[in-house]
Length: 568
Image (cartoon, rainbow, N blue to C red; front, side):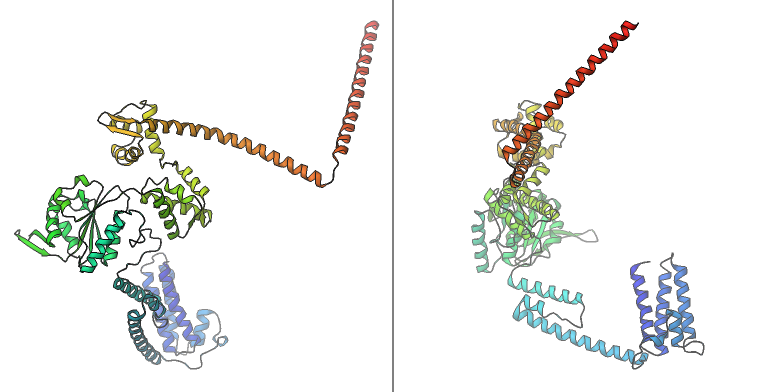
């Protein structure tokens, strides 16, 4: 049976039994039993497997209701019939309560409760205006309202205060920075962006349109949300691939308010027709489009828009048309992060997740992150998982190294796919130029994966060359593959050697411990040598006697053999 149905029936039945124990009138008891019987009937229509049992219980309660208050059955007999106990053994209430009195008391209690809720709401509103969020949480109603109401009112007032202060609340465990001061990296961009935001605020205008371009994972979306937080507006996120025509843009832009931010990621993938419609929205905050009516007619519509900020982000800035680029007043190129910046980022991210990094652990993460903060945060989360499973609060350098070893990621951040790419070029093609299709067939990977995920970082490291002749290894790439193979073979042999060395070291330690224990017992070395020498002499003597006995036995055996021969 469904737990909710079962709890409902048990609650109704318990109320009927409680009414009997409190000495309430037969009318109240009958109403409680009728309510329980009605719930049994309703559940029986849903729970087919329990229908027979539920109907039997309902008929039993209806029989009690029919006889209750007559000469056949009073409340004491009904109580004993239903529970198997005597009502005289249960303490009765001092004053019986009739159903009319109960309804009147319930109505009075409800009216008082509504009055308390209204007064407490008024108190909350005044507290929000005067004292802020913390006081609101402390003065939430403790009585007369449910926990759900407390949570609702607290969240509503908290969001109101955050909005008034121009700061958005951040979810627990959120790794994105909320302000420019908290944002790590892009030190060339941050001062320029900070000046532009301060100037726009002083003029009381929204920030001018911003274009950000760079590799994936460098923080373009994070910067867009920071700009929205700094300007005190909302951030609406869109993807250029989903904007096929102007109607897709209208559905989002029509709800934008003054000072809000519209962020379009991969803006170069937006259709040309939609891009041309956006031009006027960016310049004059107007949107012109053709709207079709039900009758098949079309009319030209001019939609006025509140001043807003459009932020475009792209990984291929060369694919943007010149009219689109010229309409962005602020253009920023995001650069890969340095190891020092990634060390700070990894440390801060791990603290936001409730853990710490030990000495040298952040550096191990930073040098494998390929200069990309998104990859760095991904590693931080996985190392957090490993530390949580092991039950440690601080992720040490050894723990971090063990994670990367198990994940197959080397010190340069190259994984198994990258190493397979380099090894294939060297071992199968001798480092000579090879076509992309041939290389993909040898690797068993798709062309898009090779070109977009594997090759960019290898080109950045200078391990490969990409030309019209194909892909070939550089001298640095060839040396890296050879050194990797050498390290791998040494590592494999080193594991065996390490096991042997461990056994030798263990035997040495045991010998040392035995020697120490013998010294502590006061054993004299000379006495030990003398005893050893005497034991050796005794053993030599025994061996000589044994040899003599053996020779005598052999002589006797030969004499017997000669006598037997003569007798024959």
